Image (cartoon, rainbow, N blue to C red; front, side):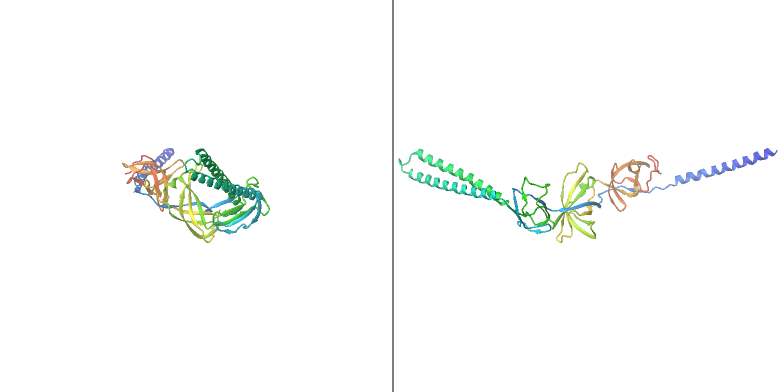
Length: 361
């Protein structure tokens, strides 16, 4: 009898638990059925935006000045930091053999010119006399003309040699090819310099233009087609915090670097006050036009997993995962590229818990 009471008591407990479980099941189904999905339409239009990229400033023009001929440094008229104008004398070399070759070539040219003048005068006189029949034979006239042509060719040859020696002599005086600043000096008076006497391959002088600079950027492939020429951009310089600068996109390489898959872009920067210096690192705010083929979706609609990025579209009341690639970002909108069309519906509050092919009421 005692065991029978225990049996009835246990049976009542099990019956009560089963009743509780059976009552809880409909409530769980109700929660799943009541889950709410927010949908948003896909819009096709470009999304203009900005990206920040690192860059570096470089001199607009930069030239290493090497000696063209062998000679001794006679005088140096500039030093590191000297501002120079185009055509200004930077240094003077001394090479006595070059001067002697110049004067020898000049003498030969003058001698050849005199011989040509004489033979030309002789030919003209002979030609005038030959107008009277029987005075000058045709053979003598032809010899006179040939002598004049030979002397003319010799004079032209000596003149070319003289001009070449004149150019060599001009190399003894080194002038500035453009306005700029001397940023490097590696020689002193008395030094022997020349094409065959380079020391560590260093130039005699280094000249850079600093009133105008180039800001060089490497644009990633995905953004290279979204730049517009003559766009005004702003940038900050790490060495000058709190101050903003401007420049204009002037040149694009038109090809991608094979190693980094990026395009080189140059921005012209006016630097009249010489506040900026070549070699400074910058952070550039680059405006982008966006892509006309891009589709816009809310940023919360993109699901990222370890394998891919996708959005969850709703077609015929069923979910469908659509792989995408991201483009420009702006506020809560993102450009995406994938198998989407305008006016498709995507789930805004998307998560990886929403499986592919689930029916949406």
